View 1 (cartoon, one colour):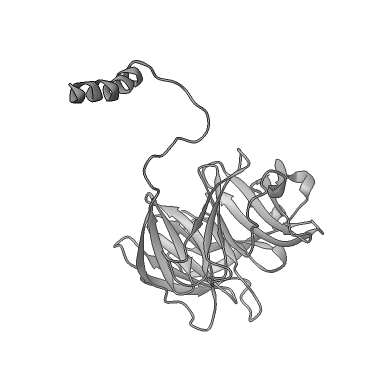
View 2: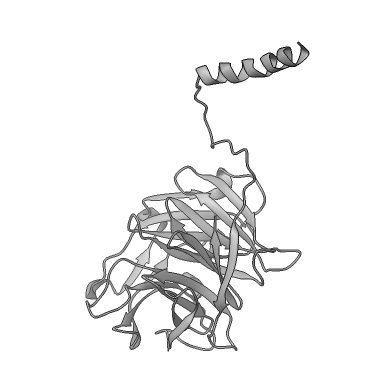
Length: 290
């Protein structure tokens, strides 16, 4: 009798839930723990004397940029890193940097294997570079700069899904500003583009909407599905490597993921390709599957 009564008491709530469904707001409640898989797909084979900085992927080709303005192109279609070519960017010099790189949507020539690449350099300058044909040569077709005296550091990225240009600015007072622009046309009359804050389609400061853990040591950004992926940290115990995911339109921090155990060394940049997130460190490329 006791067993029958106990079963009845347990069964009643389940019967009630089975009869009704209710709406609720906010993120979907997850009853299982979040997890992801991390795989090191290979060691980088660039210039050993230079720091690894930007990275993006297009149609199975991964481009990795380094300080001084070096670009190395890899084929990742066979699951590893197969080095295709190493080239010098148009602004190559001992003091140059190529902090962030993203592919655009356009090609200058149908013979080009890759679309234009947008490379964030020193002093907030964005270099629009053409990798000619099958990685024959690199030339600059446009430079873009932001006329903002309050910006201490500017990282640029293309939103390939919506054809927008984003600037992620660290201001002198330590806060972070996001600006969204139309992508400037490529033609002879627009070889040196100077953008102002007033030209932005949207501009706001992250800290006006987010008061959580400070955003320190931002290294690179990538735009995907309305979200800005920000690689942060120095890869040390005091400043661990982190991935921040900022909702551009919802203006909220979606995730802040500690990658210090899933990867090694300082993380510099990331890219979404073939349903996975690829991140670049000072030495390797990691494939993260969520």
